[in-house]
Each structure stands twice: as C-alpha cells, then as structure tokens.
Image (cartoon, rainbow, N blue to C red; front, side, top):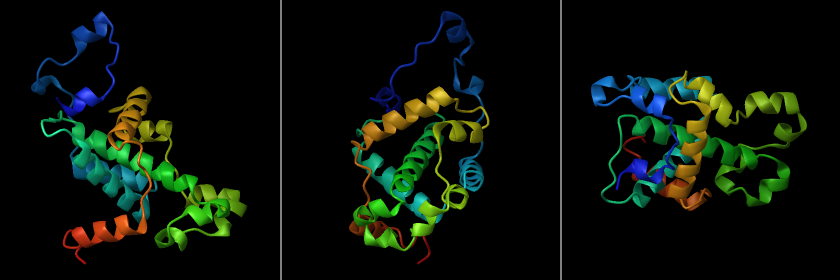
Length: 182
C-alpha cells in the first residue's frame, strides 16, 4: 500500500494518459521543499499558530499511515499543502466570540472581538486559505481539483480529528523543543 492508494483515483482520458510521465526523469521538477514551504507560508499569510497546528496534523497523519506506505516524488509537498490548508480553515472557523468557549485557552489570547467586528481588517489580519487561493499560490503545480482531493484524503488520514487541545500543543512543543531551539 502506498500513500497514493489513500487518494481517490482520477479519471484520466486516453489522450492525457499518453502524455503522462512514464518514469521519474520525465516527471515535472518540483521546487525544493524548503523554498516551497517558505513561498506558500509567506504569500498565503500563514501565521505561527497555523503552522504549529499544521505540524501537529502532519505528526498525526504520520502515525495513521500504514507501515508499508510509500510516497511519490511530490508527497512532501502534498502533505504540507493539505495540512496547512486544513489548519488554516480549522483555526479560521473558530475566531469569533461565539466560538470562544470552544477555543482552547492556549489560543484564546490570539482572538479578540476586533476580528469579528471589523470585517475589512479581519480578512487581512486573519488569513484563511481557500482551496482556490492555495491552488493559485502553487503556480500550476497543483490545480484546484488536486487540492480538493488532497484535502479530502488528508482529512480521511486524520480520521477527521482536527481538534487540537492544550495538551496536544504542550506535548508537541515539548517533544520538538530541540527542533524549535527552545
């Protein structure tokens, strides 16, 4: 079983199938992962809390992967995109006061009534990625329909468990304190 087996199959026309790369040397050259992450996070307006939740999602996904899972040449890019998209949407859904009782206390100081009352500033301050915006940021490497598939497959891999608790955050930071230089 490979990671790609978890993705729903695409219906490809005969003409398109003939134009697909046969071996690795014919596959499109992906940008270096670090550059790709930097580009998406900067241009997408991703903040630290969204990145941290995305990292927690990636760790959860890694645990849920079958032991025999093997990725393709662009799997790291795909996993990053899916995790950052879902983290952005999840945190964006919880930024208004009506949700304040359900937000873990760790995140409470990031939210204020200001985000919900000042709609013009809220959209620029609290950047929530959409599938279309993320596809545009990818510069043609991943079209919208692939972003949609990535999101569905990653949610399935997470067993739709998107909630991140205070304990999850504290444990993740503790486990990775050396990586964070803390």
